[in-house]
Image (cartoon, rainbow, N blue to C red; front, side, top):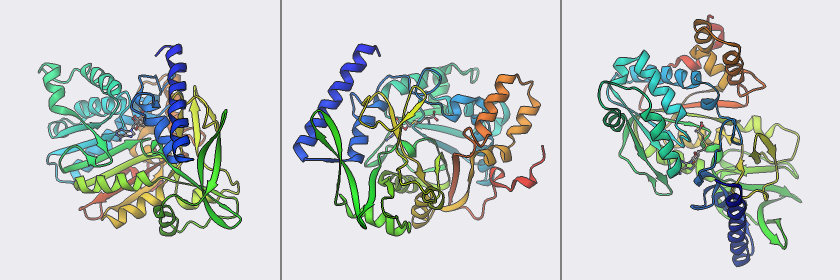
Length: 392
Ligand SMILES: C[S@@+](CC[C@H](N)C(=O)[O-])C[C@H]1O[C@@H](n2cnc3c(N)ncnc32)[C@H](O)[C@@H]1O
């Protein structure tokens, strides 16, 4: 997109939001975030903007190195064996350019041919530009003797997810996401004079402003009660109601199998142990982090830490058991990232990239992996084993 268009689109989006505020008096932060990220024409995630990677606003693990996808492929093959080696569907949420899918398929084809014959990959993507880019990336894989197009259509399909749920039938296999949940809109709450308040977005020309008022829906109070979150005076909290809704839809579609959710965030103890009162909502623009939520509308990302306790509690209420929860560094090391690195003739760049995936100050500690399962008895996964059992 050209710079001129970006500016025009930002202004159009701003006008739309102001119009909505003028009509309603104020909007929730969740509505504001939904509009700037997902407005059909001007939303950050509906544009053709280069969002991720060197020329975008931030990196994600699949864009750092193919090893991330290769280890996920290894995980999927183990799950396939645990589940009896039948037909297996992988469903990936929000695949962006398709790198994770590309690396997973390449690796499965090369290293696990029996699994390769049994699996199908569904990409859940609503951005039409992203779909095109995923398709052309995947078309580049030399999959079989068949014409690539035929083969791609047999191995990969594209579906959607909306308020009403997924556009496909029940599956047996694994739901997979990397940095999907943190991109869902959040409500912002805080305690002010011992009373629970919600932070709304208002407009006081020429600027947006924040307004504290009564919480907009009972589900927000329920969330605090169910997850036993007790806020201190002045402390802020974000509530991602879409995460629980999404998990409910996932559970409806999962006959038998696993859900692997990789994202940054923590359990409630980790999120609320901080002494600071600030919320975890952040913006990413050209590899800089900021809290200027009301700037660069539709041109910068807005995210919040994922509350994994909520995903675990919601899952349990839906019959999804927790297989395990760990740091990304633990998960990748237990799955064999160090052996893989050792076995390859690596250059310094690869080593540095691998370090970024694992290192506590890179993505290793901030990112977590939650694995849940349904209709499987006590599965043991390599990536969740204690690290003292790992030999390098
Ligand atoms: C941070 S990006 C994920 C990046 C990608 N998984 C990676 O690892 O590089 C979040 C993604 O979630 C997608 N998303 C959000 N809501 C969605 C929905 N309802 N259906 C499909 N994708 C959605 C966005 O379009 C975006 O591609």
